[in-house]
Image (cartoon, rainbow, N blue to C red; front, side, top):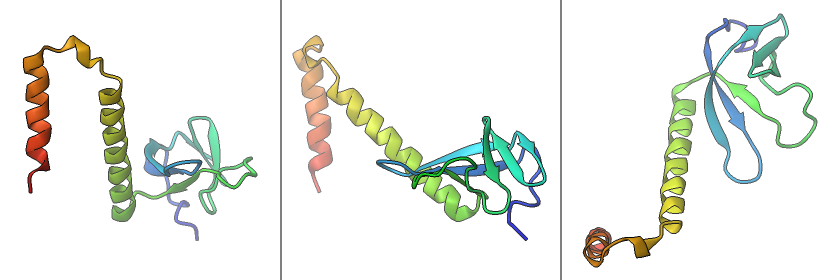
Amino acid sequence: MSEFQNLKVGDEVILISNGLGATKYLLKKVQRLTKTQIVIDNFKYRRSDGRQIGYNGYYGDRLSLPTETMRQKMKEYNQSLLKWNCVNDLRQTDWNKFSLEQLQQVQQFINGLKRP
């Protein structure tokens, strides 16, 4: 019997989305069920193995039950996404808008983090 056979509408699952770059782990709610399918955001997944229906490529999405291991992977993914967003925001910052004093404070903060 598949791990997905006991799902009910409204249950949480983790959507594992593979592609170019990092694997994404997203918490989703089951919206609809049939005897053979799970429907989430208008995408269909097989109840037998959680794989996406109608996708023949290598990087098809799949579902997992929210085990502790999967929740940890989702947490790590979310933290890496937040870090990437922070770095990207800093790269796009127009540092000329800041006063010398403000820039020195940022510099002191960053240099303070470099100490062992």
